[in-house]
Length: 510
Image (cartoon, rainbow, N blue to C red; front, side, top):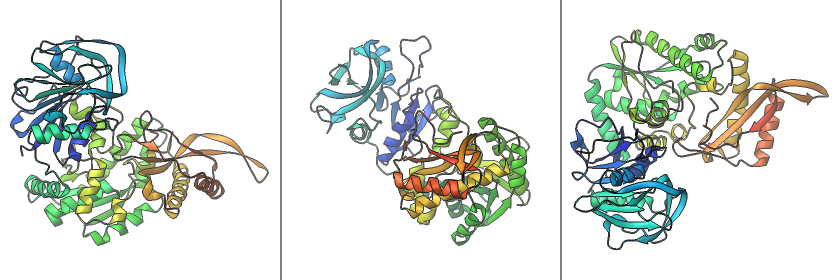
C-alpha cells in the first residue's frame, strides 16, 4: 500500500496530533522515529517532519537521513523540521528575540500557491519555538509570514519540499487541516480512501494471513477496545478465537457478571475466570503506582498463561492495545518523545510464555476504534461505554489496595456512573470515574465525629485521551451525587471534584 504518509518523530508533543489530522483526511499515516527509518520507503507517498524540543543549533540536535526523501518525495517540514531544512541547506537559524509561542496571524500569504490554496490572509496559526529562520536557503521561496515571523512558510524550488514554522496539526491553527490537505492531496497526490470499511477489510485480510489456522486467546474487558478487537478477530478466524474475561477484583460493581451477559448475543466464545483473590494477594501492601501497574500486568499474563493451557494448541495472545497506550508507554514508536506511564497490556511477554502477540487496533485512536466498531454493527451501548483502565480500580485507589477499599470505591463509582446515566450526562462525558484518596478527614454525622475517607470524582471530555478537559457538571447534580455517596457508602465522609485538565494532569490519578 503506497497511499500512506510517513511522519518522522523528533520528540514533539504534537507528533501524534499530526497523525490524527492526516487520518481525519481519510489518509493513513504512520509515526516512526527520525533515526529509525523504514527500510522500504517505497511504501510511503509523502513524508512529514515533526517539531522537536531540540534546537537545530545544538550539538545533540537530531539529524535525520533524508537522502532518499528530500527531492524524491513530497516533504512537509513542521517547526523543527523547517528549521532543520533551512539550517542545513544554506539558510540561517538563530535564537528569536522573544520566544514565539501561542497564537499568531498570517500577515502575508503568497498568491497562486497550491500549498496555500484556501488559506486566507490573517488566518490564525499556532507557534511553538524559541529559534527562528532568519534567512531561507538560496533556493527558498517565501510563502507566508506573520507579524513577528517573516519566514513562517516557504518552499524549495525544483522539488516538492515545504517548510512551516507553525503547527497546522493544532486546533488553534484554523486553516491547518486545509493546509495539510493541500499538501497531501493536491501536491503529493494521495487518495482519501482510508475509511473504517477499508480498515476492516485490510485488517481482516492481514489477520487471516498472520494467524492462519492457529488459535488465539483474547482478554475481553467489556470495553470498546477489546470488544472491537474481538469482533475483528472473529470476522477473520471465527471459532479459532477463544475469549477470556478475567475478574481481577478491580472491576466496577457487578461488572463481571454484566459483561459476560453482554457478550452472549455477539457470537463470541467467552469464558469467565474469577482471579480476584490472586490479584489482591499479589498487590497486598504495595503503594507505588508504577509497581502496582506492573504487578497487575504480571498477574494478568500469568492468568492467561494458565488459561492458555486449557486451550489446546493456542499460539496467539490478542490484546486491545490502541495507539495512545503505546504513545504513553513507549517513546513514540521508539523515538525521542517522553514516556508518561506504562500500560498493563503494552510490552513483551515473559520468556516462559509461548504465546505470540497480535494487536489489531495498535495504530488506532479511540475515536477511530469506535467508528470501526460502528461499521461492524456493534451495539451502541458497547461502543458508547466510557474508557476504563486495564488495571481497573487498582490505579484509582491511591496507596495500597485492600478488599475493603475496593468495596468502598465500587460503591462510590456505581453511584456516580448511575447518576450520570439517570441525568442524561453519561453520553456527554468521554470518561468518568472516582478516586479513593489515601487521606482521612474529619466529619460530623449524627452529632458524632467521624474520621473517614475522601473520594474525588473525575469527568473529562476528549476525543482520543491524548488531551482532555474537565467537564463542568451541574452543581445540582454534584450536590445530589455527593449526598448519595456520603449517606450510602460507609467509610466516606467527603467528596471533591477534580477540575484539572490533561495536560498538565493525566486522566487517571496514577
